[in-house]
Amino acid sequence: MKNPRARHNFVGRTCSITGVGSYVPEKILTNAELEKMVETSDEWITTRTGIKERRLAAANEFTSDLAAKAAARAMEMAGVTADQIDLIIIATLTPDMPFPSTACLVQRKLGAVRAAAFDIEAACSGFIYALEIGQQFILSRTCETVLVVGAEKLSSIVNWKDRNTCVLFGDGAGAAILQHRENSHGLLTAVMGADGNKADLLSMPGGGSACPATAESVANGMHYLRMDGKETFKNAVNAMVSAANEAMRRCEIDITQIKCVIPHQANQRIVDAVGDRLKATPEQLFINLHKYGNTSAASVAIALDEAVASGRLQRGDLILLVVFGAGLTWGAAVIEW
Ligand code: UT7
Image (cartoon, rainbow, N blue to C red):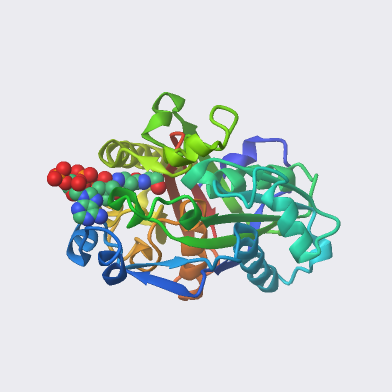
């Protein structure tokens, strides 16, 4: 196995994930409950997506609250206190508000007074983008401890009258602590990609400078998430497979050397198609979308935490994360656990 980072000038420096944690809100919304809200059925949702239920944040629970709770768990696992954190990066498309950043609000909630803080927006691919950004600060010795969180309150932008989208999404957060560790490889490589020509496939048109909030924009549903499901599906499978293959190529490994493949948890059929094309076995694939639906930037972060908690990963095992989302954006990362 090759560490592609070795060719860079980061002598003796690696980036390990020393702690992971996740948090999902208590409230569960089942398919049976959705049947009472829109014209849908448990049978349709299960066969088309694999989702059985999703979590919904309370009215007074925001993305920063979910993020702070997931972060606290990752910090506990890493043995890190708030004052040790140098940088907080939050990946989200549902920030508490346009500004200040959710990362600053999380900094306040954690009491991480020394930390710099910013958000990144790469939709469902955000956690891999954030990991890769965070790792650069560790490798360059700019930071010793970086907190990376994928967190979403998607229920705040879902149109609960649109059956095409409301059955798919949920709320939650997943976090990781990044640090240098002697004799450890950590994050071996991260592939990131984007195609802005397909930005319209999945978007929320309102609320930005192109379409500020007005009574008319709200009445026209501009502040809800919109998706062309079929086209998004096709693009997702192709982009995830090629990103995963590129990540493995860079590390000079093949799928048989990966202990656990953690794909973006949007749809069981996407996971199956990606798994088939990568020739991953069902035992290699980690799936929790039946419990949470699509939690966007939080998706692989929550799944990574649950995979670790399940005891299936030993230190030294290789993990393949692979993501896809609005933008379009995509990514894949190989992690030596
Ligand atoms: O996180 C970013 C990545 N996101 C994704 O990758 C999501 C990608 N897309 C998908 O997962 C799938 O395309 C969906 C689950 C969104 C839809 O599945 P599909 O097999 O592509 O279904 P479809 O859009 O072709 O819809 C089939 C039918 C339509 O009815 P007609 O036109 O055939 O009469 C829909 O109106 O199913 C209907 N339909 C529903 N029926 C019952 C759509 N949503 C529902 C629903 N319940 N909730």
